[in-house]
Each structure stands twice: as C-alpha cells, then as structure tokens.
Amino acid sequence: MPGAWQAGWVWQPVARRLRAAGHEAVTLTLPGLADGDRRDGRHLSETVDHVVAEIERRDLHDVVLVGHSWGGYPITGAAHRVAHRLARIVYYNAFVPARGVPFVDENAEYAAIMRAAIDASPDGSVEVAFEQVPVLVPELPEAARRIFHELLGPQPGAYFLEPLDVPDVTGLGKPLSYVLGADDHALARPGDELAARIGLTPTMVPGGHQGMLTYPDEVTRALLA
Image (cartoon, helix red, strand yellow):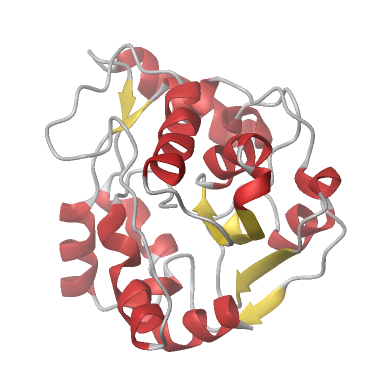
C-alpha cells in the first residue's frame, strides 16, 4: 500500500521483481490519490473499504499485505476484515496505528503544520513542498528529487485527521514483519518505536523513506524473507 501523496506507481519496481520471482503482486492506488481524483469529502474509512474490496473482488488468498508510511493505516483497518485471507502483514517504513489516534497527532510539530495546511486548502488537502523532498529521498540527486516531487499528488486531509477504531494486528494470529530503511528520517516517530507497538524489532534494509524506489532489490528480498 502506498504512503501519503503516492499511488501504485511507487511500488512498481518491487512488484516487477516479485512477479519475476513467481509471485502475484498488486499495486493499489487509494481513493483520492489517483491523478484527477476529488480530494474533498473523503474519509479514512474509504481507504480501508477500497483495500478490502480489491482483495475480495480479486478473490485473493494467502495475501501478504504491505503498507508503507501512512499506508499502515489502511492495511491495519483492512487486516481486521480480511484476516482469513491473509498470510502475513508487513509494515515498511510505516506507521503502526495506535487505536483512536489519528496520524496528525503522532507528532505535535507535524500536527501544527498539517492542520494549518488543511485549513488553508480549498479542498482540505495537503501537498508536499519541494523543500520537504530531501528527507523522503536523501539518496537521490536533485534532478531525480524533482521528478519524484512531480509524481506526488495532494493528500485528502481527512486521511490524516481521522483515527482507526480497531485494535492492533497482534490479535489476528498472523505473522508480522516491520521493515525499516537504515536512513529513513521521515517518520514522525522512530521506526523501532513503531515496530515495538506490535512487539517487533525492525528488519533493516538500505535506503531512506522511499527505498522501494532506490533499493528495490533489497526491499524485495526483505518482503520475501
């Protein structure tokens, strides 16, 4: 599952490698994050519904559900509804949601910036300024950072403001993994702290927050481990 401001394109390098290794791989774009989508009037529950609907529509079983960054929210919500179809749940540089706590409240500094941006936006969405891109992709040169920035879309603000009202995934009885980029400094909380919420120590891989683009071989191996 893509993180905030991103769509299925961000997972394509890893998906191609997974398919080459003999696995089916589905890259989803969540509602409000496709090019031209409406951003106002959205709710976090729509992202959960979308993940569940795609798994059921495709009649998928033995699913390894992977979420990146903010994508930890929709996969956590979906996991409780399709647990019987899951083989494993993987958080990659991702938030492990605390019950009843919205994304925006995980970091007080982030909260002030995001709430101000949402309030100032005509459709309640949040965009990424180019000045913020280096923390997402520290390993890329400026020209590549500019391409990455052009691919990012506005994020519906409600996705940051609304909490999940579900317990953590440890009670589902499914194998869990937390994969963390060694140079990821974009998370609002340390990755090892987020992994500890579900009793895990992170599996380390190279790269920053977007290592699925810059280190796809290593991230693929971690997902297959």
